[in-house]
Image (cartoon, rainbow, N blue to C red; front, side, top):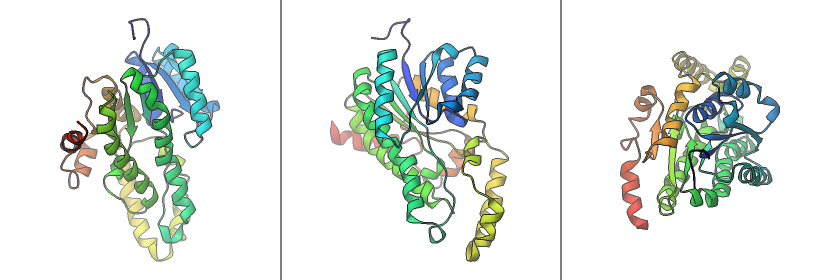
Length: 284
């Protein structure tokens, strides 16, 4: 049982930069014991510096976790329980972008995007669920507006995020029967290293795009324009912390007015409450 001297514990994946780093620090500022995970802990310098600047370095515990490696996940969770005695929430944030169109890519490219962005989420969630049942905890997953609206030249990435949305929407009513809340968080454009990490040489890609060159050039121009008004990672992380601390978190939340407007034409049930009310009745 949590006491004032034993803070609730949240595991956050993908915390070396961007939304994950900001969410880890913000959760610690909200009083959570944060297990901040990343594939390569040698990249923890910016996180440690941000935590120290916020005065919460004592609440941020860095651990290695590779979301595509089941053994790494199991070892990390074992260490979380050994160090902190409980797990109250998981924030599935780790992910990777993938830009291109299928004719000019490979099926292996699509599989790689699915492995990180979808199966990584599935593996971490599956391994964490017994502990979250014990604590009546929460699963919070960073999706994307690209999990609602398919976007040109993002076929593999959006397919993975669509899969995440379907998985979590289906899991939510089942998890609720054992006291676990499920939320998906949908950012729009965020000024973070995630964009740089895609590793695309845009001029070279446009030059190599052949019949898709004009379309790709138009897409890139539009995308760069949207990032001129991008949220900061800290702004995008606030709804994650809200979902951690709310008495009854929504199933779905967008991180900005821009994101809400972007998904609105397709998503009438913007917070997911109508679907959850419908399907929740099937398991009660």
